[in-house]
Image (spheres, rainbow, N blue to C red):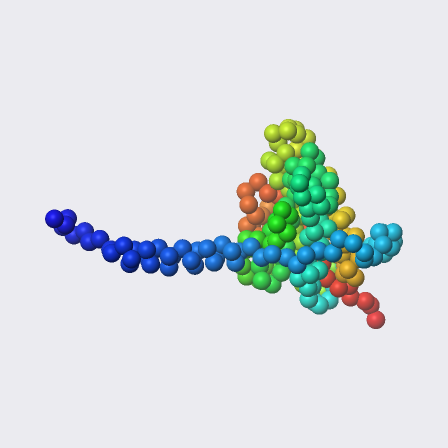
Length: 227
């Protein structure tokens, strides 16, 4: 005898309902991670030339940065170059990798995932004004189309580095930043590392994960030449 007030759905109906819920969720999860184009790992501008040409740029145009260029910059920053051990382009204490790289543009903010060379969306919407406010100062002009946010997560090192965790994380951020600057130069783009980032303001404006601290904001774009 069926219980009062309780009705069972036929198996086929229940299954269909479950599928209808699962498919959009799976699609949403897949959409959140966007694979990047394969980076170029040979050729290009000679290292000596990139070193000679690198300059801090404080005047930008709003010329878009392509997805291929973003891919190349992300790979230069933290791309995996030894897949068996997961070693990357920039050195890190004990290969624990405490730096996290975020890319901000008009579509939102995404975190670079080195292991799969992809961007994972963490926030939607035009966050450029907030990111530019962190990266630009009165001496900087223009509207760079991309801002990179370099963050550290000292907790990734705490177990093995102890009191030196923060120091090692900051050193790693410096290694990553130099890689970015040289790659940007080689691509004919420009940037400037802004170290005076207000950590509290960055965390509030961009809703950074707990324990993750912004240490560098880097506008990226085409340099504006003075006429």
